[in-house]
Every structure is written in structure tokens, then in C-alpha cells.
Image (cartoon, rainbow, N blue to C red; front, side):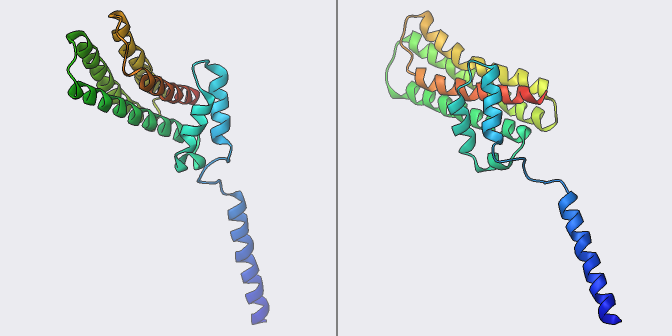
Amino acid sequence: MIQLTSFFLSLFFFLLFLNQTINSPMVTATHPDIILETCKRCAKGDPNLNYTLCVESLSSVPKSHHSDERGLAIVAVKLSKAKMKHAKSMVKQLLKAKPMGRYMKNCLLTCKDTYSDSISNLKDSLKAIKSGQYKDANIQISSAVDAPGNCEDSFQDGNIKSPLTEENKNVFGLAVIALDITALLG
């Protein structure tokens, strides 16, 4: 009798465990194609979004593979912020590196200030995303999308070749990804 009771008790706990496992939602992410699907949805709605850059940049962060769209938005903003910091660092190096005319120096200072403001806005957008304030995050990220264009425009206004054109394309591309993914959230 004790063996039979022990058997049924063990069976009961096993079935209870199995039921909990089957019916509990996955805490980690969604599915393995979240990056591809999210980038595809964003690219479909925005001709400025580079699908390949979206997939490659998000895939470069292991955490992205186990994330939902909110997590991808956070990753995208962090990538954009890191690229913006890199661009600002390049400007600082250019300012120190060689003698230049006053107009070139002013253009570089404009870019540096624009990047600084955008880095601050991207930090604020992270807080907004984490607190579910997606419209506020979109406003903050929009300024980061504009930053590389504003930097490039300062050079074009004086008919000077920008030393930051390629970097600005990359900054713009990552900022667009962050904006588009955040826009999916609400």
C-alpha cells in the first residue's frame, strides 16, 4: 500500500510539474526570427531604413536574439548612442589633429555640439522606453536621426568637403533603426 501511495504521489507531482511547464509563458524571448521580422516590418514602412544594417547590427548583440521588440528598441538605441559617441570622438580627434580654417573648425564644433545633444537625447529615450513612454522616446530619437544631416549641412553651406560623411551615414542608419523599432511599440 505504501508503495502504491508513493507511486501515485510521485505521479501527481510529476504531472503537476509538467502542467506548470507547459502552461507557463516563456520568460525569455519570443522566437529566433524576431530580428529578421522586426527589421522587415521597419524596412517596409521606411525607405530610409537599411534592412541589412538593421539585421547585422541587432544580430551583433547576443541579447537581441532572446528579446522582444521593446528589448530590440533598447539595443538599437544603445547601438545608436555608441555610434554617436564614436562620431563625437572622431570630431575631437579632427579638431586636435591638424591646423584648419575657421569655417572648418566651426563646422566641426557644430557637429560636436549636435552629437553631444543627441547623445543626451538618446539617454533620455532609453529611460522613456523602459518606462513605456514610447512617444516621448520617439521624439528624443528623432533628434538623433537629424544630427548627422545637420552636421553634413554645416559643411555644405560653406562648400567644404565633410570629413565625416561616411561616419554620418552610419550614425543616421543606426538612429533610423532605433526610431523605427521604437515606433512599432506605440
